[in-house]
Amino acid sequence: MNKLSRWGVLMIMVGLSLLVAVPAAHAGDFECRGTIGQVTIAGNLIVPDDATCTLNGTYIQGAIVVKSRSTLHADGPWGAGIEATGGIQAQSPREIVVAGSRLGNSVSVTSGGAIIGDPGVAVDLRDTYINGDVQVQSNIGSVSLQHNEIVGSVQASKNTGGVDISNNTIGNGLQCQDNNPAPTGGGNIAKQMQGQCMYFGTIVP
Image (cartoon, rainbow, N blue to C red; front, side):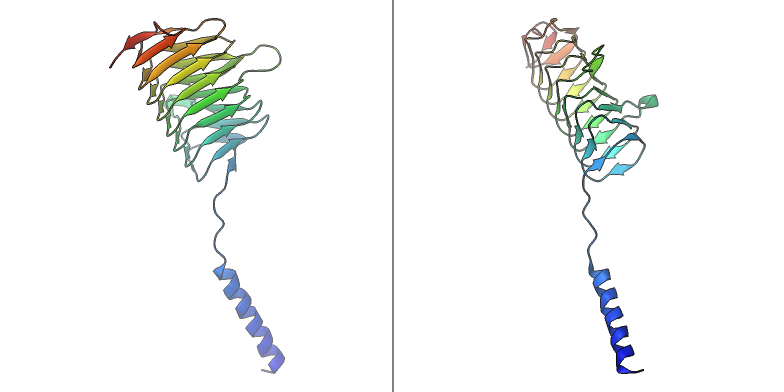
């Protein structure tokens, strides 16, 4: 083998060794458009502007972020909800529906509901465990919180599409203010109840 050939082989071997040494890319945010089933998402799940994301039995190792005019459905058939190590953050979404799920952090939905025509549903949260707070604010669509176990507090303020808060177990306080129309509900358990939700259930120590 001449010197040129040996040099070529050497360069190929060096290139291969460098290729093997390159570490795998770290998991980043995952954009959801369409339907995702029983898979694991390693990182935050993002629902982009104007998108619809349907989750059925999905496990998310991070938070769920819902962008403007977007829809999130995590209420699969036969109670096949989702589990996330983080919570849900939504600013100006079209619709958030979550049922039969477990969330490792807080839920915050602001300015939800359709912008044109019937406001529809802004938030429908039911039969779900939330290891944090729930805050629903300035939603023009309807807000429904039913049969949830919420470790932290619940705050509903300045919603105009109607609010129903019923049969939830709340670790801290339930507070409602400046909602028009006034909220409806009952059967809740909380350490304190204030404002428009003062008589919505039982206060426990």
